[in-house]
Length: 155
Length: 150
Image (cartoon, rainbow over all chains, first blue to last red):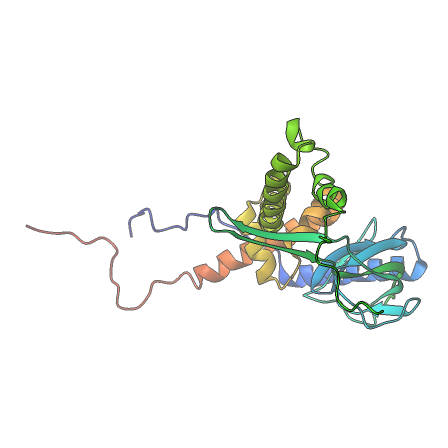
């Protein structure tokens, strides 16, 4: 059959590596990372956490301010469970989409519950004698991230 | 003798006009020109400023998302991937990171972003292979070139 413009696909041909060798390489990498974690050879850990319908990139000793109310008193310790990504200097653990609860532990304390600065909402239509002014102060909560811990239970 | 109603020759006068005016002027003190001093001009400017800030709060979200997308595009081009390929392959690999966090990772965690780009590239190649299928001709087709005789 003669070659036309549609004989070969428009993308360059790709060859994936051998699956058996890949599996061996993956197991090796997992073992190395497990070794690093259990030996404790990582510096500062950062995590991407899904909290209050937002995603935050956090480290330890971090302050976070949410624009809503949390039903916990000031000084309560909170564990954040939806962790999407954890990383250190030499390795990252990417969750699909979340990481396991026995793998990561993120702890935070509620520090302060206040209101935001009074924001002004104004609507105005010219020549129609229409103006409305409303002052809104949202409740806010401030959290301090205490620790991020990982445990060597990769497989 | 007890007087129950106020006397009719006493009228009430506005005594706190100064503070009512200051309430508006305090929002105009950093403006330029006479509208930071004169009440009549300040009222109009302050009203427009409030309305503009309300509308801007809604547009800030659009603007920030466009900024994140630009930053992610630049970072993924450094690793040889275009933005639509990067984002679509990440979501197909069930990684649910949003653009804000991806932009932060691209700035502060370059090694992590490189690994995400490699993940997206690998998923893209697997997608190409899956699209090609077996590589065999479909049944019922005998040739791809049709000669037309007039």
